Length: 136
Image (cartoon, rainbow, N blue to C red):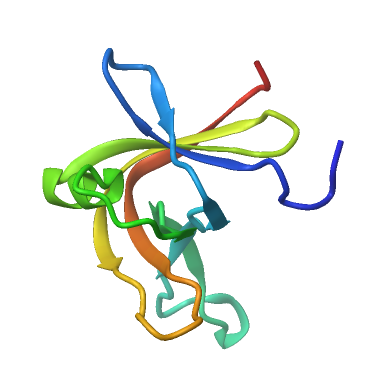
């Protein structure tokens, strides 16, 4: 098992549903970071004048990916951005998979410069709860 991200994968659900198509040339993946609201429930008799909180709603966060860009009329990320909502999967080096529903909020083509590597970045807003699945 590796402690580095090498061999991680990012995939988009394909056809038939439940199958995932791996993207090529992925340089970096940031999985969605989950948060939870803190709802204040302080009242006039809160102990020792301390604010009190209860756990609120959870948020699936955002995922981002960077890939070495090769322009193509069949760009999978461009298609996914325009499709709206979709299903996504991140596979970690040890085979554990994170799946989440979401939609693209950003698709940023690369800067074009002499001698510069073309890298595209994209951001996906997770909707609902991401799930972790055991290695296959």
